[in-house]
Length: 329
Image 1 (spheres, helix red, strand yellow):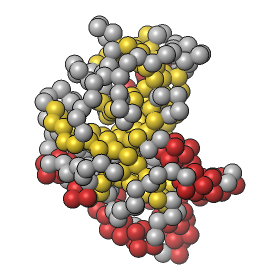
Image 2 (cartoon, rainbow, N blue to C red):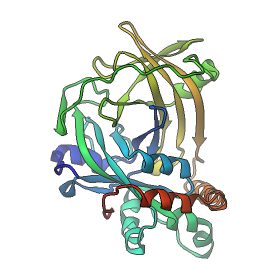
Image 3 (spheres, rainbow, N blue to C red):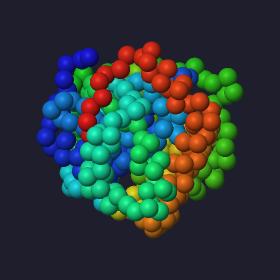
Image 4 (tube, rainbow, N blue to C red):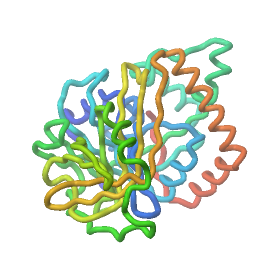
């Protein structure tokens, strides 16, 4: 374990205040996947740890994190949170997965979650519907190695780094065997993203940790999406990269998200992204409908995971990995 990284208090205000964050993990091919999570204030500045929770039904994501624990969290949006600080914050670290959190840990999360996501619903019907969603959760604990903070949400201002020094850019990656060209309808992908205000790109950094940066779209053609990024944030050359676009309302009601993987080509003139895969999710614009949807999805996901033996496989995989001790939320 490296020396404790204790980030500045104003950065912690952002981390503790944001309703959502972007989480990125690495793929075996050297790419990244970036998705939206609700960190619910999990983490302890004094201990140098951060984290988030997820469902045991998302076995592929957990498998990837256990196999390669280099992860990152980007705190990139202030809407409906508790901080007015305009900083863009990127935390990188080494993750461990608590697959069987204690009852005490799950109970301790409830007041934190209620602060961000609203009151936990209780009662005979809700308890039955939401059992898997509330009770069958896992924690991703992150021992922080580096925290970078930019003065504004576009990450175009000054950068402060706490912890490990900021590395140089990674070299270009070899192109995929199937080529770098788009594999999905670019116009359709651009249309799906256009109405989602928060857009982030993630790539594998020189030291193995994902780097997440905010991006904007500036058009598209048959070769891909044209991205606008502040100077100095993206490495030159080509590489695999993940893209997240999302929007949300208070308590994450009405969440809309689009997750892509693809090929990023950075030249002196432009950044162009060729999407290879795309998937999305639209949450109901009602709190009760959202909970019903989450409950049913958690039941289905956990049933499928157990049927495929995913929990046992993850336990075996985790037992052979070097893990940091779990921390409370």
